[in-house]
Image (tube, rainbow, N blue to C red; front, side):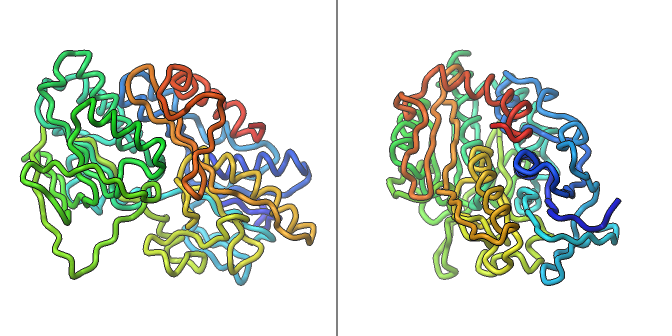
Length: 424
């Protein structure tokens, strides 16, 4: 195996494979290496459907070697260190690889340890998370067997991949319990670090009605700090609570899934809430090997790669691009965003190789398919300005059956057969 590549891609997920495939479709003679230690490749957007009992978890996984683009070299290693001034990457094995151009897209890190007690209780004691391949099926077991009581769904204060996932499963659970005839015996709580249910007002209005329909109690600006599975308690910090733990819906036009920041001088109240069922989402951040590297944005506490949000080129190292969940671009971290980012990276990288200016622009497009019940889904599409960018000639803020088919049938097929191969 060579230790030098014309283009070195860090990450063999959606972003890395899409970019590599599209590059080779433009120029088949490119010498591309892909560094990723994972044996398996996952289609994570379907894990919500797994948790809702309507998708087979085994259809979300394939061997990485089966999806790596032909005419690339898969380097099955884990990155330990970036040395951008030397155009070099060091792996945890000690092996070093050099490059002419670098594409950084290793995804996001799930910080399970940031919630005290979570790792110890996950997958038992009626505590689960659809963010885990191992535990998403347990979510369905919890929902299916629930007899009523207090059901808690959490969303952290950090940006996360698939920002709608924390409340998607809540709506599906409520719909299932409604059909089962026990919803009136369910006390459902949504504890979220965000300032509102959604940052785009057109879609937020729909979700507020859904929340009212299911009688969900919402707690915004709340930071979950601990989960005790044996005692069935969740602890969270919040600035304002009322006597019934039922905070009003926030009308603030906040960016999608942004961080809620508290000053040290603010008096945060600690709340302990008992539960019978808890679906939780861990805080998330850039992988540690990015956090500790020269590529990180020094102003970003979560350590994301510093890029120009439009060209996706690193702001200090011109031969480096980044895309996907690991960047500091202020967009939602979704597969739909990657689908729009990948062609921009490909176009701009080839321009730099040809000694031209990187002029292709990414406008912050992202999409979030949010099922509001079994058989109906709202497809939220928007850009950096939180302006709706609807693809279809219908009002996408109104949940409908066609978008449900798109989510459950068409998108999984597109992912495996088109997106990873660079043709969609």
